Image 1 (tube, rainbow over the protein chains, first blue to last red):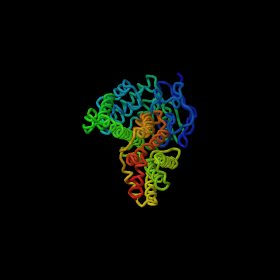
Image 2 (cartoon, each protein chain N blue to C red):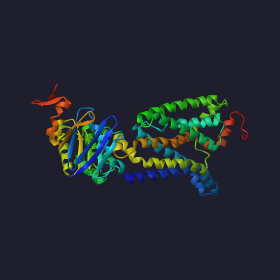
Image 3 (cartoon, rainbow over the protein chains, first blue to last red):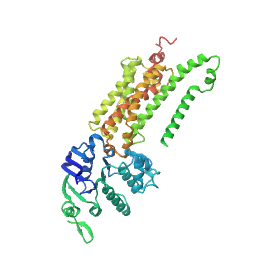
Image 4 (spheres, rainbow over the protein chains, first blue to last red):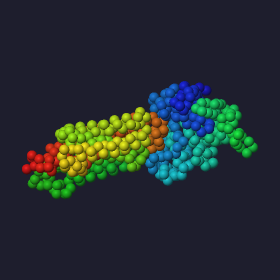
Length: 228
Length: 268
């Protein structure tokens, strides 16, 4: 299957070394790596944040030139909202239609929270609202930074299942995560980042072998433990 | 829901505008009385320009305040934070007291030049990246500097009553305006309102942070510059609202300023 997303010579000054990247439709790729390894920088570069160099094409279209609407959507790692807006209004901030907003609200099970103010929601609930904002508008490429952070274990599993289904609908997803078990279980592909470069890229089973070298952890009978 | 809210706001605005023109109700009664011509003249020449100016300045201050608050993601932010309002006051004071240019255009030009100078200094200090925190701190520094220089300019002014005159002038009011002057003031305000309205979506997106706004295709750097630039007329409005009629009507202002030192030729 041909690539839905292609990036050539993608780089961010002092943060991300030039790299090429391809994502197929239906692919859920997880970015893993230690703190400061370049996961967020790669998401920023693809989204056109921070004046990246290189080029990105989504389904043959340049999102930096024509605008991201319908092409890509980005969820930052921070869950801050400056104003006490209603959750429903936050989901609509990206310019999605009323139907798309309703669909995203239903997808994240937010019907009961949609009429509440953001500052009166828990961090986890706020996360779900912001994830719904990123999903609304049906973008072809979803760039999510730590989407499972702040979510309870059940919602972490539900969200990964939802992302899996969204990928099956023909989208491409690039998701930065720290939870290696969740990433290994749900992703089609892992991209291991180290010092602003791609250290390993492939099927989860192959990439997780490299984790000990890059992270300094190894999987033992009690789960992940420090290697040194 | 949102359309209904807009309709309600517009209706309330129209109602209040009409009330400001026609209250006390004697004015309305006079329109249908014997002195209909005089009442109409008073309405057109005194009340309408004043109400239009108040509406224009209020809209401009409201819009620029909302834009600046959106930009700095802080409900306490105001156009003063960019330093342009203090720059406008400094420009007008220097123009009037040190350079002696007190004509209507000269005072306006002095205020605009002061605001523009403050803006250029702000952009120079904030640098090409123009980050929000740097803009905020630079604006505060410029505001303090311009305030101090305004005080210095008044202290150095030849007139011993400069402080009194200036603060009397800075308090200001909207009286004694003509429709032409109201139109002259409204033009830049309306242009800025249109500019700010165009940036509404980008400013909304800033609610979720600069990264999200950028990822949604908004050029945050350009937006910062546009909002800060739009604060120039806001600064002028601010000063003019406080400086009021005398800024727009220099002969009156000039006369009052000189009456206090007994040199007003037309005082009698």
